[in-house]
Length: 95
Length: 416
Ligand SMILES: Cc1cc2nc3c(=O)[nH]c(=O)nc-3n(C[C@H](O)[C@H](O)[C@H](O)COP(=O)(O)OP(=O)(O)OC[C@H]3O[C@@H](n4cnc5c(N)ncnc54)[C@H](O)[C@@H]3O)c2cc1C
Image 1 (tube, protein in one colour):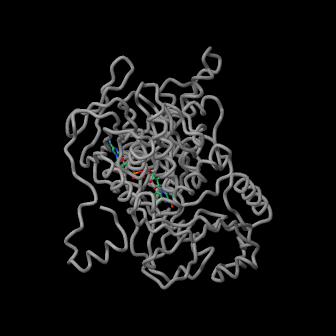
Image 2 (cartoon, rainbow over the protein chains, first blue to last red; image 1 turned 120 degrees about the vertical axis):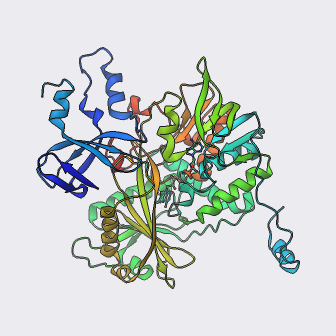
Image 3 (cartoon, rainbow over the protein chains, first blue to last red; image 1 turned 135 degrees about the vertical axis):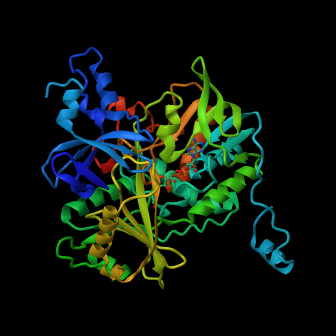
């Protein structure tokens, strides 16, 4: 697989390590009453879809940036690549 | 029809005209007492034991393709019980004991071959860790032997003992481990279940559940609606997709694992050998091909094929322990879908929906578990209680912090 890095252009997926579903960006509020349960769902449960999947890749052998890659899990075709901080800010995070 | 040596001679003398189909091809009935979804090893074994050990009837297995087309026919056929943790080892040892009697039990030649499995160690701390594992195995009634380099050299002279980076210092040997003809396991269980009245329905994909007031009533399939009192799901790599239809999110990600077979060679490898400093394992099939594999590719996927970086990694692992493997040519490779769980251990449990039960999270090691998984799932379906060796395989272990993490890598499925 080739990942089209927003800053560096097309790079071999071998340069990256894979973390998982991009929902891992959305850490629950640790002060909530049910924080324990929320963190359980955050840490352990996954949608695991057959189809479009947004996921976190780390450019470990490159510029060490975190990317959000949109990829179809049935075909491995990548349709979008964003820098994770930009993705998070768009979703309302401050940093 | 019972299979026996006598039968083969009789058929040979009468032109092989008396063989019957090994199982029927029935139309689905409108409803059953038990539906098992997934005609892989685990689903078929579940149906077999439900009928044979738990005296149940009106059972169907629904398979979206053909039986044996999933992981049960794609794996590298290794069986063993060399786990360490309490929640696991009694279960896998139960499974190995069932393997030992399986061919007589279901009257089918599954070519069970206890040729032994050796996990290599490459350092003193790794030897100590393997000693601890061996002791845990012995405490659970399994067999285990620690070999030093000299003992290992006698069994496997071809290993690269003096490798500069990862010298081979010895190995953990389980003599009762070995290999089994994987397709024959599916076929043997299918035939055994069919003989006891189980309907095995192929080309029948479950597309959803009918759930009323928190209770499951049946399944929607590509061959129409089928009702059932109890439904067990055993679809391995498709677990996430199927259970989403019941409104569940699972502690599971789907990944791909690849396997490789070389051209046929004369016998060179005595049993199963695994590398201790990387992920590589190899055995030799009865036809002579070297059967080997290594890590999963490491990203979510439902495509039953992998990519080249892992091919390279696996081959490097092979070269590191037995350079002679570089002379063999690769004939075939393929991939299968892994239901990778968050702690690397499986789940056999009820779900929040009444009457709906789940079996999955087998990662890349569920073939060896087939007999015990079927037995324990049948136990749960028939009695509503977990089998004594499967009490730890619960959904709520993640929320309660009772993970069974053999590798100790945490909630990162691609590292298990
Ligand atoms: C390359 C590879 C090597 C492996 N090596 C080993 C090994 O050496 N030792 C070991 O112990 N394990 C090994 N495994 C793991 C092992 O094969 C699996 O854990 C195990 O086979 C999974 O259980 P199963 O046999 O029931 O799965 P499967 O055979 O995959 O059965 C699941 C079935 O469910 C069906 N299905 C899916 N969705 C639906 C639906 N909606 N409706 C109806 N049916 C459906 C599928 O078609 C499939 O037939 C390996 C796996 C792979 C891929």
